[in-house]
Image (spheres, rainbow, N blue to C red):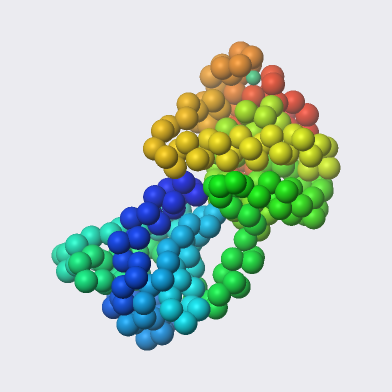
Length: 253
Ligand SMILES: [Zn+2]
């Protein structure tokens, strides 16, 4: 699953088209039904930015195309006119390059700020709006498990499964604790860790994995055996160390 850091890399690649009037095509039939090409073709692309797990493409006239990649979506930038097999969702063609979206299940055209307001603050922003994230986490039902809440893009934008596991471990907070039982200082420590680890990853360094995909192995901090269990509505696997991330309704081993 693309996380915020890989979307930042995609946004960086798409900068070659910013400032150009683009030809827009929607070869895939499911994308064609949305009439995006008719509405966007020939407009100037004014900016591309990653916000959480969304890529926002701003066109002249205040139109914002929001692309969320889910599990399978990919943006590629190729030379104009490159040959390809298959039907991409969207092609934005500039003078020398074209950006191609494959498998873009969420592709919505919105006006201006509406595209961003439904998202929590971006964990990768510099500096991150920790107070804003904290406020949204506190406005959510406090009976929710913290590991589940961290993946809710309306509360905090950009954290995926790898970095929620790693950030919770860094801050010694169990994913199974309820929000009500996690003090502000601990929540802030989790968010700070996620920001730091994800910035490092976005910059190209690969922070050492402490718990993610290490189930059954010894915790690098306390030696207890790392566990894995599906969590939340999406049943994404949570990884945690029961030795140094205690509390909450952890499932029995
Ligand atoms: Zn441990």
